[in-house]
Amino acid sequence: MRDVIPFRFLINAETPRHGFLFADGEKPWSTDVITETLTTESAARISFRLTWGDYRHVAKAIDREFIRGPDAIFDDDDEEDEDEDPSEVHDLMQGHSNHVAEVKYGRLTDLTRNMSPESMNLFRDVSDKWQKWLGLVSRQPMDDDEEMEMEEQEAEEPIETQLVKAMHDLYGPSKNWRSLEQEKAVVAVANGISPLFIVFPTGFGKSSAFLLPAKLKNAGVTIVITPLVALGNNIVETCQKARIDCIFYGRSPARMAKVVVVMGDTAVGKEFTQYANEIKLMGKLDRIVWDEIHKWVTDTFRPKLMESSDWSLGVQEVFLTATSPPYLQKKFMQRWKIQNETTIRIPNRKPKIRYTIKVFKDDEFE
Image (cartoon, rainbow, N blue to C red; front, side, top):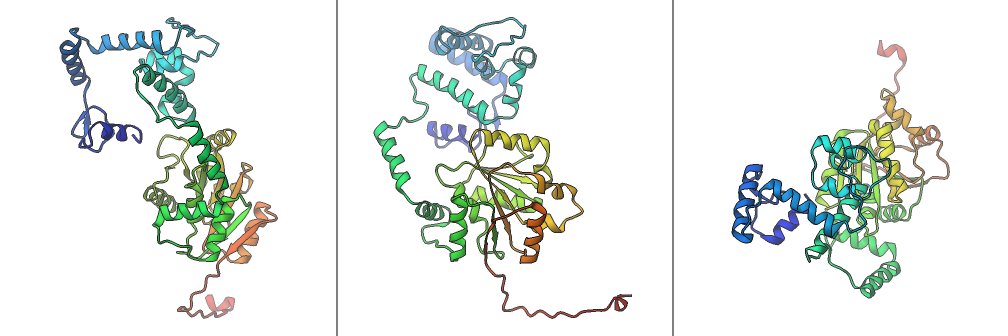
């Protein structure tokens, strides 16, 4: 939808704000409407009544003749071939029936059901070839000298300057660091300091520690592991407002977003571990952020959280909390076998609150 909607507005800025290229109101055209429109327009424009079935054959013929090239392998039989056929993705994009897909293309079924970085790259390559043949520009080409100049400029720009620009883009040009500790924490995250503990009271900008690095141009994937659904929802909402690509793992098809939010109980599972490892193997995983880490010490009734101490991907790890006194942090590090940590802390002082402590004997509670 992110790609389709801008294309629709490029054609007609007054079209409704939904993700369908051909639609009436909020619903896409039915097959009957598409067929009727296709036959009417083709008869009027090329003097040949082209049905939907005819179009499928024509499109496939064009694809085989002009898009794949003369060296493509064609096999219309239903027998599976043990060798990998790189041209099969062309047929996937043409929307074969479930039967044909299962028999012929079973190895790539998941690519269309759950879009992944691999499948997007494969389909994008085919789309580029089609647009080139049609005489269109799929993505605006950049002059080599201009691209090199931009890379050199980015390389020379200090990380602190890049983060300030990201902050102004996120919060507005008048925004400044809330504290020296916040600036220090964000820079530490961007520089890959690990293991890193950030202990800030509520409202002192803990989330900026991973939001701002995620907005850098060359940023990879940040996985945020949260113990509570409400916290996860807040992170997703914050990312959406900040125009940061974000998904809540398990609620939508798994893909490689800038920020991936996942529940702590889900993160240690086999499926998510494989998903995260695939991102790491592609060199795209920047860090793991553990939110509200005191819950991993206090919520002993949740066995999955207790198992997290053995879960590691060998990348930067950032631990966030607002309510973790030093003794609780020490207990956490002992359980997780963490050494040589870096801690950035803002004391949680509340001058308007007075505390009174009274010690009771056991018999006073009976």
